[in-house]
Length: 267
Image (tube, rainbow, N blue to C red; front, side):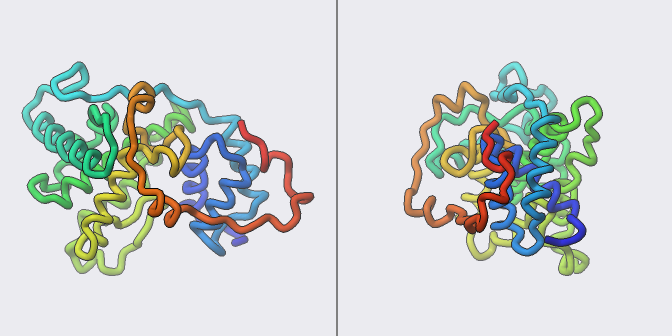
């Protein structure tokens, strides 16, 4: 275990727990170990972190859906344009990846899409996908900040990794960006994969959009796309072979006698 825990890693652990709240601290540590390798914090550190999160975090109600021309739909021309394009892109993306029952993006996603729309050219396919992706990242991180800190949540602090990724996106064609970071917590440079594999980029964005639904993670999600009513109505067409291929594997615990009971607790 490193002596100093990088902020990106500690934030990653927080978000991982927010996505998998029904899992024990042991499984959260295993996920961190799989993702971060030697940089992963110790089991004790993760256990203490998860215990603190359980006592502090308060889950928010499901996000309302911004249905076109509905109660939460904007009226100004610029917002209407970008959200109609975004809604159409999300609808096509979900249907082409086997996610049925799509009704719209969340109001928080719509709000962020309107805020950051000038960073994207919606006439370009990759830009449309990345506007969707960044809307998910920003909305999810803002929501997590509110769950984690309540009224004391700072929007900039909550969305810092999404902001860092957005700045990298804005510099993607400049020489300055050639030496830039590749990852900021859960945010990473999806767009770099586009020239080699457009289908893979679409699949990744769709997984985020669909809320990382079963079987990939629990129903409590960092990136909510569908409300709880919709979740009960959505049908998924899953590729079993692909799902097994991407499933994480975890190293065994050598001595279960040295593991705190909190490791195995399910809240």
